[in-house]
Each structure stands twice: as structure tokens, then as C-alpha cells.
Amino acid sequence: MRNITLILDDGSRFHGKSFGYEKPVTGEVVFNTAMTGYPESLTDPSYAGQLMTLTYPMVGNYGVPPFSIEPNGLATFMESEHIHAEAIIVSDYSENFSHWNAMESLSDWLKREHVPGITGIDTRELTKVLREHGVMMGSIVFDDTVENGELKVGNYGDINYVDRVSCKEIICYAGTESSKFLVDTPTAQLNSQLSAGNSQLKRVVLVDCGVKTNIIRCLLKRGVEVIRVPWDYDYNSLEFDGLFISNGPGDPDTCDPAVQNIRKAMMNGKLPIFGICMGNQLLGKAGGARIYKLKYGHRSHNQPVRMVGTERCFITSQNHGYAVDNNTLTDDWEPLFINMNDGSNEGIRHKRNPWFSAQFHPEAASGPTDTEFLFDEFVKLLYH
Image (cartoon, rainbow, N blue to C red; front, side, top):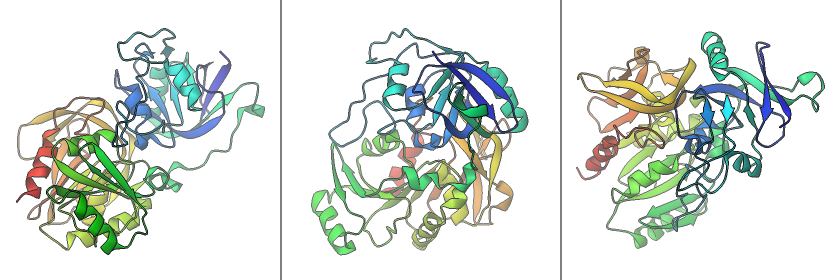
């Protein structure tokens, strides 16, 4: 294992050993306190541009599942087609793995996908630094290849990561099948082709800001047709029954075209709309609220949230660095969920129209499934 160093923006340095692909990288250094789920987290597009630190000390002991693809084009065990995190940082990498579904080691997977990995550093001390200072940019360098251990580091918020991870074509999912269309396909032709396929199913347009595969799975298993479109595609002339806005990476303020298209959809007050994570923030912006960046974000499997107006509390899986400012919600909107740790917004709903969202991940891959019922609520609205 070669020597490797993590250099933070404040000058802090953490020395460890490489167990992944050997290349210098930069990104926003964040931490995740979940005990399991590194295959799902690494393939979550919301981690694009980030160096992912895991606080659980031993990582890699259950290996990596096969990267198989279903007939409809969705990965069987992963949340996208490849790793999106820039790197993974752990305290103790387990070189030996054992699991009924494991096909390769974490190290081999990282090397195959050209993603660096650091082991042998105190990740809890690193997390303390991030909690005190807030998330910051950092560099991973190899001690004998980068002069003075320096790389040019940009600003995470300046890059539209949603544009990088969103699909580039229109994809229709129905049951176990899928079909693809070019984004410049004329609307009349697209509507005709879609109707010819599954006219009996309720149709949901999914705005892909970096969607996790399990979100699509959760919709499909509830018997709806999913039309996945690029984040900036104007879908309002398509024929559909509901709108879904997905999770995604980066700053929602870089996604104004998506906000404008949501506002167009809102002109039909009866159209059900459901947003998750980035979708919560974009729906909030479309409704007139402001977004702010959290000091160190919420990334874990154990974030408690309370449904506003009730004593119902749920344990949720989360991965986000921005939040809706509750104080800027207009009179037509109200908080739906509140984080029990810091009081930040965890979802919103419209007071009259069937529009709601969750900042956490009800599809929970990986993580607790306490809130998957929100998909049921959304699908019910399609039939009203």
C-alpha cells in the first residue's frame, strides 16, 4: 500500500495508505455515520464530487455484490451504473471479505472503477474537524507523485453536478421492460409511442437530477409507468398523471431550468407532485422558498424526523448538504417533516394541492424502510 495524504482546505493533513485506484483527486470532504451500505452509497449519484468519509471503523468485510443489470436496464444491487463518489476514506479496510452475495473485494472494485481509497486514518477525528469547521474542499495526494502535496481545488458549489449525473435521453420503464427516446423527439410522436406501449398504466414523469435506482424500483413495483427525463427537459407537453422529482448532488441553485419546469407543472393544481431530497429543495424553490447550505449535512441511516402535527417519529436514511428554509415558505406551504436533531426542514406540502416532498430517502437503499409508505401515498393520488 502506497502512502497517501488527505489535505483539507484549512491545512489539516491526514496520512494513510492507499487501497483503491492510485490517482490524485479533489472534492468536498463529507462524512457518513452509517454502519453499512458502502456499495449503495458509492453508487448514489448524490455523492458526485465528494470525498466520502465513513465513521464506522471497519469497512469492506462483506465485499461487493455482483454488478448485474436487470432486463429493464436497472442495476440489481447498486443505485446507479457506476461509482459516483470521488473517493472513499475509512479507518480500517478489511482485506478479507465474506458474504453470500459478494463477488469481489471493495479494493478490487475501486481499482476497476478508478476510484481512490484511503485506510489507516482516524476518521472520527476527521469527522470532528468537519463538524467544527463544516464540510470543506480537500485533496487526496500520493506522497511521492505530487510536489509539495498540492492540487488545484475548486469550489463545490460552482459546479452543476446534476447536469453531470442526469440521464441524457428519455427512458420509459414499464414492468420489466424499458425503452429509450432521444430528447429531441417531437412531442406528438413521443406521446403516440408512449401511449401505444402501456395505455392501462398510470404514468409518472421522473425528473432525473441523479436518481437512485431504488426510487425507480419503488415506483415500478406499485404498478406505474415511469418516464425518466433529463433534469432540464421540459416535460409539460407530455401526457402523464403525476410528477416525481428525484434526489441529486450539488447546489439546487444551479438547477433553475428544473425549477421553471416545475412551476409550469404547478399550473395544473390537480397534478400530484412528489419530490425526494434534491426534489424537496427544487419543489421548495418552485414554491418560493429559499435554500441554504447545512454546516456539515445529514448523511446516515439514523436521522430522526417527526411528521409535523403528529407525534409520529421515523428513523430515516439521508444524504444531503442543503435544506429548505422553513421561515421562507409562503402561506400556501407548510413543513411536512422536521429533523429532531437540529430542527431543519425534512419535507414540505402544499395546503390545498396534492404536492409534497421528503428531504430524506423513503426508498432507503441502504437504510431503514420506515417511510416507504410515502410512495403509496403518492400512487394513491394518481387515482384520485
